[in-house]
Amino acid sequence: METKGRARGCTCSVPGTLILLLIYLAYLALGTGVFWALEGRLEWDSSRRFQRDKWALLRNFTCLDGPALDSLIRGIVQAYKSGALVIGNTSSMARWELVGSFFFSVSTITTIGYGNLSPHTLAARLFCIFFALVGIPLNLVVLNRLGRLMLQGMHRCARRLGGALQDPAKARLLAGCGALLSGLLLFLLLPPLLFSYMEGWNYMEGFYFAFITLSTVGFGDYMIGMDPDRKYPVWYKNVISLWILFGMAWLALIIQLILSLMETPGESCSCYHGGSKEDFKPSSWRQGPDGEPEPHSPPPGYHSEETAEVIQHPEPSIHTVHHGKDS
Amino acid sequence: MPSTGLCNCWGGRVLPLLLAYICYLLLGATIFQLLEKQAEAQSRDQFQIEKLRFLENYTCLDQQALEQFVQVIMEAWVKGVNPKGNSTNPSNWDFGSSFFFAGTVVTTIGYGNLAPSTEAGQVFCVFYALVGIPLNVIFLNHLGTGLRTQMAILERWEDQPRRSQLLHLLTLALFLTLGTLVILIFPPMVFSHVEGWSFGEGFYFAFITLSTIGFGDYVVGTDPSKHYISVYRSLAAIWILLGLAWLALILSLGPLLLHRCSQLWLLSRGLSLKEGGSSGTDGPPRPQKIPISA
Image (cartoon, rainbow over all chains, first blue to last red; front, side, top):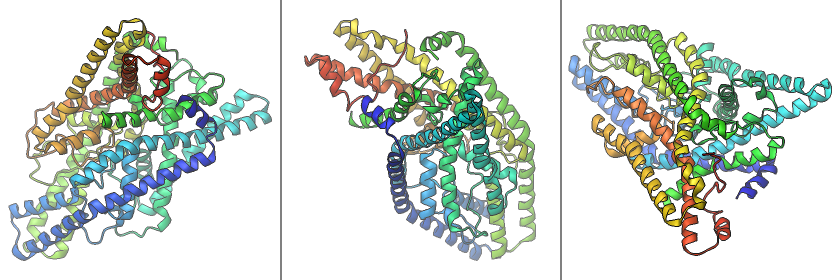
């Protein structure tokens, strides 16, 4: 297994990543379909029931009194909690339709968990648990690969710069800063502009949403594509999903950087030393508990060795799951 | 970092780290409370006033009024105001809840039943999370490592008689099972009892929490019609931390334990270790020893 992982790690080029990405997408599609099938009807029912209650109330209580109002409120809140948006025609993000289910799948296995949608049938809940059990490690593998690709790009830049500057250390520092800044721009500072254009939030709200999403905290107090009064173009949600994927890999790198800075306060400069500390666990902070307990000091041939670890790392959880089910 | 450094710091560095961690959580709780409480009170008052005005004005409802009212209720709900009952509901941003909120931020659970609504609160939340998330990871790692050093006996098993190996294994298995029972199974039962959920719901809540997904459809201590003891939510936050650390331990120890089991089994079958090693490829994902220097 070890040698296999190492070999895969060395040859991990674009085709492997592509296949993995395809599996990932297929898995997401599977989740989308199942959630759609399981939850759609119930949600439709609860929405229907709420409408019926509303009209019954309108007929019966020509003048409302306090308790009746409270019961109305309770009904509204209950309906809102169970995912049925209660005003007029709602956008598809808020329902168990294809787009909504897909977004729910994404938010589940990335552990963002917005909570604007959540399963309510027993079957869907059970499926959700197992979906997450397999999906979260899978998501980690994908994020690891993406993060490594980003780092490889950064190293390539550093090497090219090093050739130009004749000072490898300086070039590395420059490339690191460049990558940091461009990532910051691309993933955290520019998307809020898109959000403020599309959703009508101010810049700060957009930035807050971006960070809460990418750090996988995911409160769900701000959600994209939820305003029924606005028209969203088709590409919008797809672009957002891509942004989430790449942005999470990038933010995981950043948080990994902070992590290594925190664990080794003395050698704060060494984080740019080839960036190898971030290399092997760009997203393990999320899974942190079972991740590697400490950042290793970078060995000379870190690339092959740590790529093996990258692939290996998320697998224990998969295996544990299987073993747990077997025994 | 060499692993010896880690073992040394379990005594020397974990306690300060623990203190720093708790202080950080407390700091976060205080600042969130400071920033959010007034805004929350304001929006709650506004909601009450709107409700009263609604009752005065619309003696008979029409559809438009109702839609408007629904909108108001939903906005209130999104902002974290509980529209049921009256304004004497306990605040969402009291200390225990703020603590709980800080916990959900740094563990990236993010239930979302509470979320900062002021701009200052949001900005602070971003930077709080930026520092808090790595801190949380380090803390959990240290907890896991500290527990794992107790298991360092596993490393020295080769030179012990088989009977004591078996005994160790059994003790370890018992310890792990008991811990899982106490930390992962028992609290969901308590939560379901207190909150009036079914056990399935309690388990679902526990999973969604400990996997750090945190939808927020089930959150402990949010039912306004129930009276909780004051430390209930803080206890829940502590349970979350314990559970996460325990999961860390299980996930790092489980493969090792399984590997040892299979080795023992193969040894008792009289097979050579070499065959055991090669047949271990489909079983344990990490056959190499975890580098703990005991």
